[in-house]
Image (cartoon, rainbow, N blue to C red; front, side, top):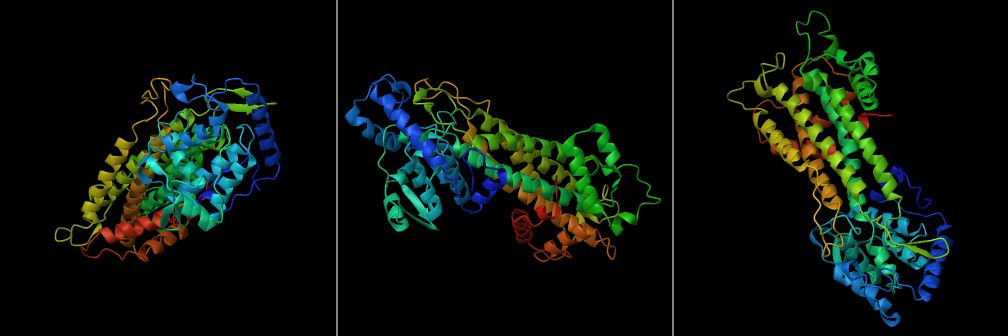
Length: 500
């Protein structure tokens, strides 16, 4: 059971992956009280934004009582102006959950059946077809939430499994009735940051797993390059005191513990220090970990927040504000993007080190025997470099790029939804970069046989070799890269790392 306003990141991960959402039962009375308070306030004849007035620049236009329901219906239809590819099913599940939990806090003036309708879609597997583009992250994620909300009234489109059907057909198949919208309910559904927050959370969860994978890839590259584990000594990191750095150093020590490859060159190794891409892994990955944790705290607060407008508090006081402005989400997404870009950048440098005989301590050029006739990992490194360059461009902050909308009524916006959307592409790119590094590191380890790496790194090596054979002579590289990417995205390597 989840109490509205108290969901955890673990709860949200589970919902995204298909887990159920059950709300603690006390929400119903709170929500009904908010709806009753709004009705009392409306009965006084006061002008209430979006309840008996127009929206945005049309806020000064009063709507007569007999047209209030039609006002909400028109709002949903007119605002469903999104475009682009549909959001993936896990993200849509999370959007439904976030919207239901937000309205269930009882500050939005909706009837309980609105929350029930959202929970019904989620429970029955009816996932609205939501175009990914069209929100600037202020006044809420209006266009995408309008596409979601159309399904609640039996319009728009939805997915039933892999089948895309009309909203009306989806409701019939799920045994759900269409909503009749009361005053404020359409606006409450459309206002809010649930879309940008859900997409950013998906990016965060991917980034957390990719960071752990980067530690596995980096540790295996240390062994492949016959590097030193001295830079991971806890005394070094304690003296600096950065928490992420301390944890990543500990993870790297655990990953390398018991490696016979490391033990083989502890004495009489003429090298004094490794290149930064090996030696400074705790500093770089640790800084990324700290960024991700800061972003996680922001996004968790936002996931539990009430972000529509106006809000109904107390005995029916209606407050018009701006909780729908998604600046915190935009900042969080921008910092996640920085972490994804940097994890890829240092991974590619380790990959370049492994393929360069001037740097890799005895490994053959491009990690293949009979190099010259064989090109080995030469172009795989080029592919990684191309993706690093793309991620660097995508990491440019989006939160600084406000563009006024709605006839300058909404004169500063967050661009949070676009900031979050690019995280999906960046995470996929990073999965490929790390997959290539893992393949290269496994190849390097093979050249040190019969020596064994550490137990966890041998597990990682075995997983790779189950999908990609050792590279003895040139063959098509793309299938191996795709196979390694799938392992990365499945979390096979992230599972080998535990962070506090």
